Image (cartoon, rainbow, N blue to C red; front, side, top):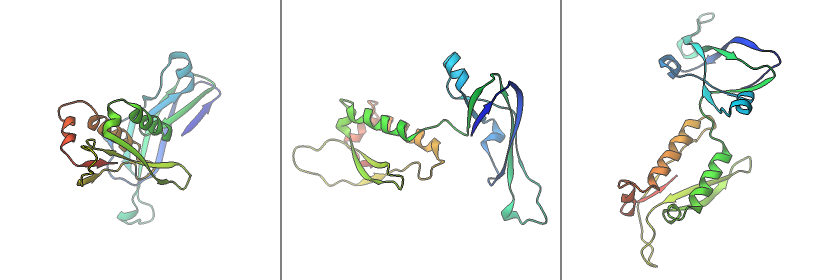
Length: 193
């Protein structure tokens, strides 16, 4: 969500309606994220958690709605300390297509990690973006290819699944890292994501 304020707004109340999940992490302490362009320029502050008086509740049913059509509302207060500020709100920390491309390039250019990982083009998305698959395995022994069992791991199947991108990055960092547990990859099947 993008917001622009021409005057200082002390506190604004937001209500996001028609949510479908009965339970929410907002009920147990999760808070939205905010990115203020002014805060970034003045204080080098990026995305940060925000919001006060956060509530997540079931909406009253309308005209005898059945249980399958029940909806929920997320409400919270936000402080906006700067005037003429461009502000972005998010549910979780963004992980962009550019972030992914940069990560994959760093992985393939790494002198050690590139020995255990191979990046290949799987297809192109409807938008024309490259969709890759990454194989993580021990390098072949000599010129004789070995048949191996494979494990396929996917993330971000749907556009709004940003947290899964962060989880996959952490998992790939672990698999290509130099911990004792990660070094077992010499003995294990290929991991594809």
